[in-house]
Every structure is written in C-alpha cells, then in structure tokens.
Image 1 (cartoon, helix red, strand yellow):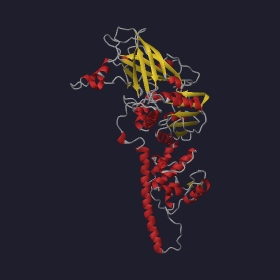
Image 2 (cartoon, rainbow, N blue to C red):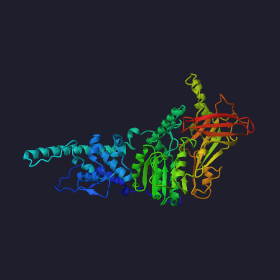
Image 3 (cartoon, rainbow, N blue to C red):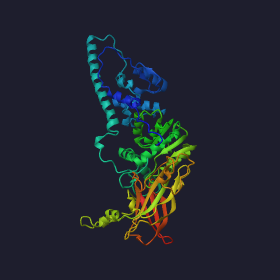
Image 4 (cartoon, rainbow, N blue to C red):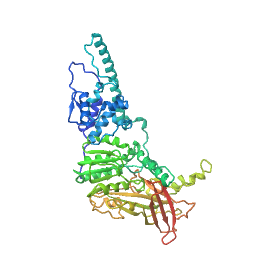
Amino acid sequence: MAEAYPPSVSSTASSSDHEESWLAKSGEEEEDDEVEQVEIVSLFDQSRVFPSAAAMLDDCKARFGFDFVAVRDGLGLDFHGCVKLINLVRRHTKEGTPLPSPITADHLADDGLLIPVLADDAFIFCLDELPEPGAGGQEKHAPSVDQLLQKNAQLQAELEQLTKQFTNYRLAVQQTLEKRWGVDEEAEGSPAEGPGGKLNGGQPQSGEPSKATTTTGSGSGDAGKEGQHEASAYYFESYAHNDIHETMLKDRIRTEAYRDFIYTNRHLFAGKTVLDIGCGTGILSLFCAKAGAARVVAVDNSAILDRARENVIRNGLDHVITCVRGRIEDVTLPVDSFDVIVSEWMGYCLLYEAMLPSVLFARDRYLKPDGLLVPSHTSLWIAPVADADYVDETVTWWRDVYGFDFRAMQAGICDETRMVVMPAGSVCGAAHAFRMLDLHTCTVDDLVFTDRWRSEINNLPEGDEVDGFLLWFDCFFAESRDEKVEDRLTASEWAGQGKERVAFTTGPFGESTHWRQGLCLIDRTKHKTVKSGEVKALEGEITYEIPDGHARGLNISITWGPEGSKKQRQTWLLH
C-alpha cells in the first residue's frame, strides 16, 4: 500500500479510559475533613452545573417539564433502575433525540444503560440525597443529643448500604462491558464455521442455509405476510450474537478488502459524510472515521448496535460516528445526504438474505448525485463441477450406514443449495460470469433474472461425470462511479490492472471466505448424467427468483445440456 495504516487508537485519547478510571474507584471513603465541592451536570443541558441534586432536578422540572422523582416513583425504580433512567435521559440528550413519553419499564430494560453516558456522573453518587418515595418534607427543629446520635447511626447504616450498592453497580458495569460483551469465557469455544454474509457481514452458520432464515413453508394473504414478518424479525435477531460477527471479522479477505480500500483512498473519505448500512459491530464506520470522515452515521436494526456504540465510545470516535437503530427504510437520519455509502450487504450466492434492496433504497434516498457506493460492482459466476469423493461422502454414504440401508435419508438431499468450500480441482469446466451489477445504476428489478451461461468442459477425468454446478461472486471497489468493470473480468484480473485496485473473489480459485460457494448437486434420480467424453461444452440458463413466503430467500433454477440439444432443468432452494 502506498500509505501506512494508522496506528491503533491511543489509550490516553479514548473515552474508554474515563470509564476505566471511573470503574477503578474503589468507593473507599476519604478520611480528610475537607468536603469536596460537588458539581452536578444538568440532565438536559451539559453547560449548566448545580451544587446539589435537588437544585438540578428543580431546574429540569421548571425548564424542561421533566420530573425525575415522579418518574422514579411511578415506575418503582431501585438504585440500578435510577442509574438506567439517568443514562437514558443523558443518551437522548447527547444524541439530540426526544425522550419517549411516557417512559416505561421497557425503555429501561437494556443493561447497556448501566454504562455511564457522562463520565464520573456526580448525580449517580447523589441519588441518596433524593427524598424517599412518599416521604414528607417536614423539618425537625432543635434535635436532642439522642436524636443526633440516632441520626448518625442511621446515616452510617445508609452509607454502608450505599457502598454495597456502588460495589454491585461497578460489578454490573464490568460484566456488561467485559464479560457479557465479548470476553464471556463460558461462550468460548470454536467459532461458528462462517456465517455467510450480510449486515456488515453475515449470514448463518455452518453448511446449512442461513441462521437468519431457516424457517420453511410458504404462505399467502395475512398468513404469508405474518410469516415474512417473522422471518425478517428473526433475520435481524440473528445478528445480535457475537459468533456471527466474530466469523465475519476474522474473514481476512472480506474485512481487509474494505480496510485497504478505505485507507488507501483517504481522499475519498476525508471531510466527507458517510452512511454505513447494516453496520454490525461498527468496524466499517471505524475505518471511515480513522480515514478522516467528518461524519459517519451507522445504521443497524439488530441489538448489536448497542455494542457498536460502545465500540465507538471505547475507541474515542463518538464525536464522529452516530449510531442509529432501525431499518434504513424507516429511520430518521441526522444527515440529509451523504458523500459515500458503505455496506457489507452480500449474502450467500450474493443475493441471499435480500439486503441489497435496502442499500439501493438508501442510494436513491440519501446518496449525493456524485456520491460513491462501496463496494461499487459485483459479478456472479457459474461452473460445472465433478467431485466423486464429495458425492460419496454426502449422498451415496446413506446407502450403507454401519451395515444398514438408510436410503430413506436421501429424500430431497439434492433439493437445496449447499454452502461449501470446493477445491479448485473439482471445477470441470470454464467459469462463466453470468451477471454484473453496477451498484450505482442497478435497480431492484435487476435482482430477479434469467441469464444465459456456457462452459467448455476442460477438466473431467475419464469415467467421471458432472455432479452439479458451483456458484460464487466477485466484489469490486472502484474509486469513482464513472469507473467501469468489464463483465468477464475476474477480481484478480481487474485488481491487477496497473494500480492499487481492490477486489476479491469468493470462488474456488481464491482464498476461502465465510461466504464459501453455493453447490447445486444434480439429482441423479431425476436427471440424466453428463459423462466425460460425451460433450465438449454445456450451456443453458440460470434463474434467480424470490420464493413465496421467504422474502429473504432464493430459488435458483439451472437448465443445462449440450449445445443445440434439449435441456434438463432443476431448482435448488436457499431458504
């Protein structure tokens, strides 16, 4: 690279240091006689400070119509509930968004609200100054010595209880930041074998179709709509877990391609506004901010956004990056238009999980006329494959399971697209690029299609036969919306054309990625085999369509046969 990567964020510059120093306070009482002057920052105006909690709350009630004590009493909040309420108000104040009205217990359910929005928040330390629920305000005059001694004992007991509460509070924050959010030893173990793509990554795990949309069945009318709604909700929920994001972040080909393009082309990001769609953990937003972006808005509809926000704060970039939760089609963004849209939207076989329509919506709604999409182009590829060992291990194996005939288990075994990493040697014909998407100009209609394909058979050993078809995609990062990518160029060919271009492939001829490849095995019980020596080339059509009842799924249909002959046809599901 022409430009060195930036150094890691200095710990002295990170707001996480404020949190760590705050957490490090042991709650030990200072034994000197001096009384420290308390300055309590207003919940709604950080430029105003007050000498007591009561004075600050009186001002909030008078100027902003917010009665903290009334909300506390109405919800029956304990100490931790009050801390969450404080941080809820401060978070909305910081983000410039209105408070929910009325505030309910559901608004305070997020444990992330235990993390202080304001470092060393003096108001939290003064919660014991607030009147007890239902307490009267009558003053007691000229207390006796006995009363003073009794009051002193009471205060000592309350102080001891408060110390215990702060100890529990610090522990809760530590568990939220360190144990529950990323270092939970109980959750350790081998990471999931690669979810496939989207939301800044990914899709589901293992060789099964996506964790995000594993439900089956179709529906029509209200039932169909309800099923699609449930599948969509599950899709977003699946990205709330660490394993998916860990797999995507550890996909070096994927993550470093975005990093390399952003850092190598700082001039495209410096001083610019950037929209990150499906931000996940926030890694792409952080790359853009470190490259000099003036403002980054990170959007995600999953609960992972809370962790992304914490990642942003810990790395001292919350003055650049704003996190917004919701569907891009529904949210109100703090910026009207953007210079750059960055998104890792790609799914298995490129279009599985149907996130690209959301990116195209954002492009048409928010991208400036001369704005840039990152990545800029993607291409889809198909090739015939022959791998007798794989078929024996996964299909014919069922015919003899410890001496028993389990052939019943083969029913429907070739009906679904398998997500696998196939060796390059299994490809028995020339790869064909059947669709190129220019993301600056394509439309949603371009994502449902039928395209022609053709492949010269060039690597089919004697006695072998074509077992199926392999699908993958290449991804390109152009520096300008006017830069074109030729339809038949591979990622490596395009990237190697003279300058520091960035592109990657998910195919069998490159390093494997968490997307793997889509394998469509021919059902030999329904179709004639194509054996070595019988044909010199295969041709046909490939169709991508959205199945009924699975808005984020794919049905992939392929026809094939020798040139000029009658074609066979099979459909594979990716739901």
